[in-house]
Amino acid sequence: MNINISLFAQAAVFAAFIWFTVRFVWPPLLRAIEARQKQIADGLAAAEKGKQSLEASGKQAEKVIQEARARASEIIGQAEKRDAQMIEEAKSAAKAEGEREKAAAKADIQQEVARAREQLRGQVAALAVAGAEKILRREVDAKAHAELLDGIKKQL
Image (tube, rainbow, N blue to C red; front, side, top):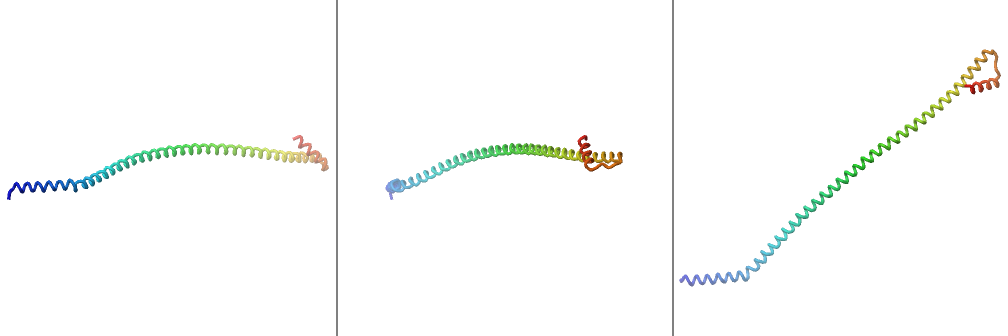
């Protein structure tokens, strides 16, 4: 066997194999590789987009949390202000009630003093008449007695 013919035959078969591979095998492989590359690129783009979306959502969530904290702080401030206002209103109402009760008590005391004075006048008048009766040693009639008591009451 001649090595040259065998070498040329192998070269021809190899060339046919290369032509067959380039013509029929290589295009579907390239399409599959390109499709896979496109799929991987799309997946990476989607992952990057998801990452950016996650960052944006995190920033938005942080903003919402800050707004909620600010609103909560504002509500707490308003509640404390209203609390202080209610305490002041209660103090004012209690003071007014105390003043009113104090005035009512003073009025009651003045009425009691007036009644006591009237009773005292009556008792003093009765004592004065009794004393005068003993001094005069005679009984004064009821009409004269009443007139005498009324006169003494007026003088006192």
